[in-house]
Length: 414
Ligand code: LLP
Image (cartoon, rainbow, N blue to C red):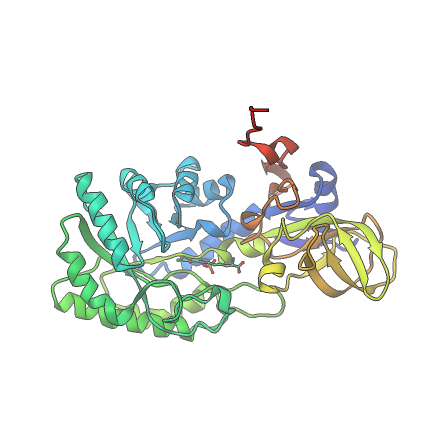
């Protein structure tokens, strides 16, 4: 819950951001507990009429305290690595509510997930199916699997985050999936339990999801008729959020639109939202270091593409506002970081009233923000704070300089 106060300060719940910046320093990620919890509950309630389980996509924001909040609400998790599984378990998540996506699962990751007892492997290729079968047989288990079908629908989103077209690397061509299901059902280490798809991220329309679901359901029905009944159907994530002026569909609209297709089915419904649960709950606070007027007016801030990669990587637009009152005239600024790359631009031509030292907030950075941070240019990664009413909890310390060489070794020989 980000609040614009009448005195022009920005607050997260009952914590004014200038005080947070003073206390914890900048750049700083700040999340609202209430915003995350209400987004999760809205999703959950939207699907209350169905036997369902939310499996939050950990990749959107995998900080332990956030996973812990969601686990306490009863959330499951969608993971894409052994590292994400370890995080979920560390945060108190229930492995029986974990689905494992991703095209490149290693043997070690498969063993780790089998030992933990996850709900399902979302299989992305025939080769992966063979590998999972082999690992399961070796350890005397049957691995629960879902085939991620690629329904070949255009999600009409940014090409970098579109995943459901046949030219994408993700999923199994829906035409080929039927044969692979039959093969999977014959393997001794495999228990065929579900079907999943995920067609892309930051979706602003429902039609592509409706198309993907109806194509998948047609296959579910054929399989059932052939003696391969499925226990769950996973519709992936992807609902968008508001960065600029988008009006993405709500979970309630999604449930209403999919409802008629799902009515009367016995499959448990799984979903893997990431961005829609945490994106709008987060701000990145950064301070102006220098103003540099000239051919273009630059505001050089203390956050960079190393802290928030989306603008540099996808040319993504993120709203940037002053977080405190400023006595200056607005000008058009390019908001840039200190990293030695021209792509280190957080926003171009933003009308802002700035002075050196002004605190800025970059909105809707709760998803795919900190998780994509790096230490490039030997920049320690920022701190993260979770606000709960008037309390601010430091959930991740700012990296100390020693973290920059953690695990490195100097040569011992001369
Ligand atoms: N399930 C699977 C299999 C996924 O690949 C993803 C996201 C999700 C669920 C969650 O999608 P969401 O609900 O968050 O849209 N870094 C990019 C986004 C990459 C999304 C990758 N997959 C960005 O900053 O826009």
